[in-house]
Image 1 (spheres, helix red, strand yellow):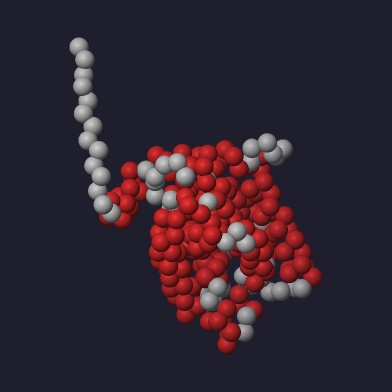
Image 2 (cartoon, one colour):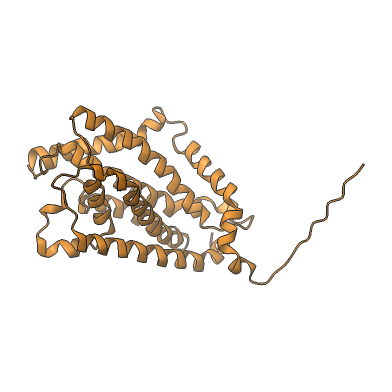
Length: 277
């Protein structure tokens, strides 16, 4: 007994535009495949493997604790300085890693892009997932630090997922801009690592943002990561750590603006990716 299957090919003008967001769900298996591929490739043929994901923030935390805590003697509000630094390293590592990976992701997938159609936004989105896994591995280290220093986190930690979502949106929004621009202007593969390196020192990672003079705090909050980092410290450390709400609202607004414009710019440019690459 034979079965005959009939397939209907529908050619519809503007289908890509009309069904773009629905296609994201249709291509969810490709999204999971690319994410899993990036996880496997990330630490392939490295000696210590996934341990790199925790070694880098731990070493940075040690250096910052010595420089800002011991030598500069910046205030920590009674919190062990390594914990003050590491609560900021978590969102910063997620942001910087995602931005670096997003910026080169489209160019690195040239072979795939020039052969088949799929929503290109899947490519930079999959790199964020890899860095999210690194985030959770580093969070385990923070738990060990708290046990070592006999530090009990605040009850506010229950709202930490909201600040984590804000960190992901910040990284994805800026990453969309960088990945699209990097296709046309390869200078961005040099600019992005430089900006993330500078951002580590400009953002309140090695110090508390409370040391910023009050008259400059709103301007300082124009860096979206200021609101994210302050939110992490407010949720995890608690106690006397207070959120500077005008600056936090500004950071959230800028994050949403960058995400919205990043999506629009990426969608506008992705039609030409295959030709430019």
